Image (cartoon, rainbow, N blue to C red; front, side, top):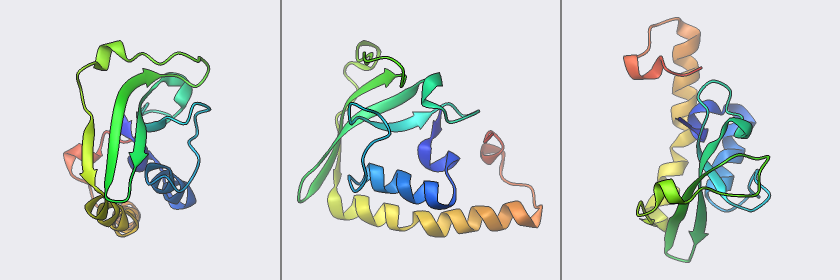
Amino acid sequence: MASVLWLSAGSELGLEVDRLQGRAASSLDDGRVPLYVCPECGDLGCGALTAVVVITSDQVVWQDLGWQVDYQDEVDLEDLDGIGPFVFQRAQYEAAFAAVPVLDAYRQTEQQSGQPSPWWMRWRR
């Protein structure tokens, strides 16, 4: 599985950041937010690790982690039972996402330069 941020670029990256911060509607009808998707195509039809993202004035919580596909109504919560919830301080969460455009620009520059990327980046598409 690959992060939705890793597979996105340009305006799609901004949209995924907005979804994770609750500023845009989820790509899933039930409102759950994809966190990790198929590393080959990013298609929700291949399956995705999703969560309910709850945002309060001072916290962001990823809860009820589950496996789902976009063509079925059911979410498999059983295999991930006992994992999470993950609680983040909202200010730190938003600060981490503020760095995403900078990291994406760096990634694009590396790709254009033809320089080999670190081993862990070669698993991308």
